Amino acid sequence: MSKKHKRAVPKSGAVWRQSADEATLAQNPRYNGFACGHGVHGEAKYNRTKAKRAWQKQLRQEGASRGSFPFMGCVSAACARR
Image (cartoon, rainbow, N blue to C red; front, side, top):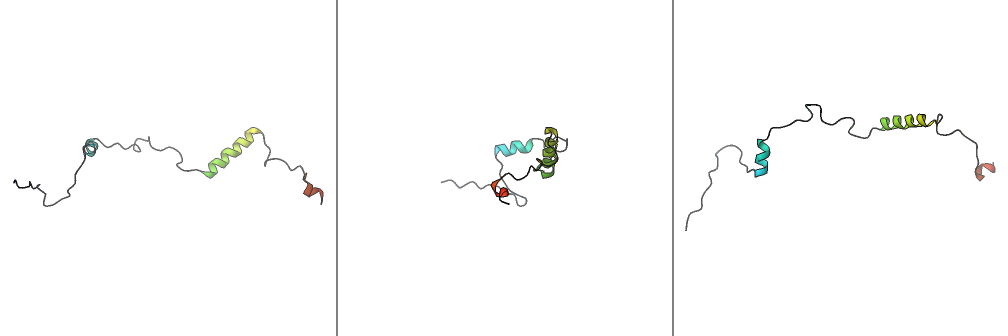
């Protein structure tokens, strides 16, 4: 019977194993997309103020007066009893 082959382990420093994919990615140059100005543009989250401004602008374009509609008076049966 043969003796088991012992692997040489370094006395100091980190020891880890890389897969072939990890080794390939480690050799490739790093690319920082944000450094060139090609990263995220605009707001990342929902902006309530921006949405409200857009809604008000749309109302102005459609020709609505201030507020939604002018008050026309009470038409329901509950108002007729008063």
